[in-house]
Length: 220
Image (tube, rainbow, N blue to C red; front, side, top):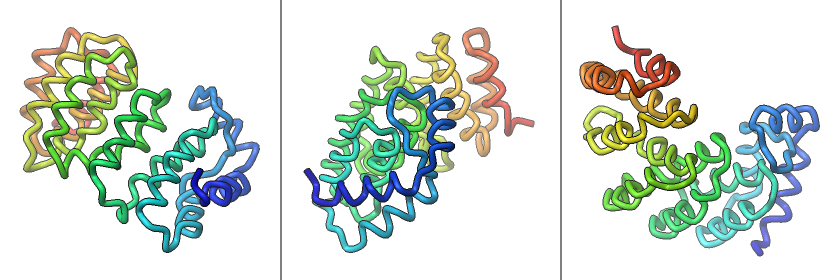
């Protein structure tokens, strides 16, 4: 166990409030214990407790935090593994792929995304592994394939591969999958609206309203 874990957990728990914990647990529909530590306060706690900590210790801490049956700890683990001072892409990617199948809520997945994106941008061959996720039994893993590849919706990137995954996922009736498709298209629509319009025309019948409404946000 990381020597840092007790101090970090104690600080996170102390920074939380019962009122926020109850609201978050209900809102997230979470089965985990909640301490109610707000994200900005969590980041402050991590900055204060992790000064001067080396890469090996940080990676060990991320694993130990994730093992705790506490929502705040899992969120903190994602924030720790994404810290800029961790540069070992293979080890970070190992953490991501080890934990992606344990995602059970959108916030936990979204907090794991920055570390995943860092790895994918550093080594694009990892996209081959992500492509297999769109057939995974867990819709959270299928969602991660889109959420983790959002940088490819930005200018100068080729969105073709992720758009192909979105097309394969379009018939799904899972709300979070549809929301993710819409999110991806919305980002792409900021600079390539014609490509988004074409996607919507082709897949109109498969997409739910939440996906279409998100995708059209920047279309005029």
